[in-house]
Length: 297
Image (tube, rainbow, N blue to C red; front, side):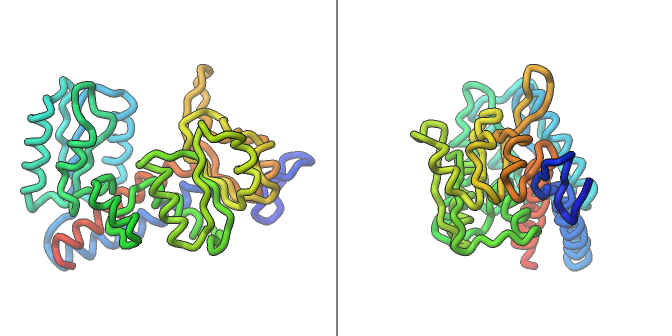
């Protein structure tokens, strides 16, 4: 049964579900309106270049989802797909070509790259103003300095969810599990900028539960299925699960054991349907903002 915004199966009441799909729909609606305004004011269509090197089934799925979202909001996408691969010099040459094309406002370099390609060098070769993933060293540096221009999509999506549901961050005890440059590190900076007290942990942290049990806000991006159990969640915490993993059974699960965690948390993101949809939505938002900056709007 349902009581207010709490989902209560049987006798045990589960946490409020932080619905990323609903928040993503709102973001995409705002982006669609913004794209229309850019077209009206400049005559230009915000355009995203999609670069995929190698034959990765999961990457193809991600690309398809991103292209579908782009079409829905009116962003044009141009494909540069190389299933047979590219050499590092060829990839860098392509990125320089896209940097120089004024009709392209954003460059999406789908990761991972095949063996033999240097991801760091390739990311750094993208013009910072066209880096819609927010991974360029300059953009990460601006985030660290507290003056972000482009924020990595997944952490930005986490913040969008928290804001949508009115989660108070000022002074909150926040624990981030995971230290990647894609999620953990930028997310910690965003939370610090909102005056949360942030502890960063990872899979090698000694007595991880001692930290997670302090968290009023627990954000998990560890890359390991169900590494956080309900016993590791503070009563009444807000839990954001960034992970997505496929078990041998084919079931998709997060980095948090949802069923047990939901019995202790007051709010939690599901997997799937939580942070995942937000990553695509924020990519569209970043592309729109990049187009606005380059067109002087």
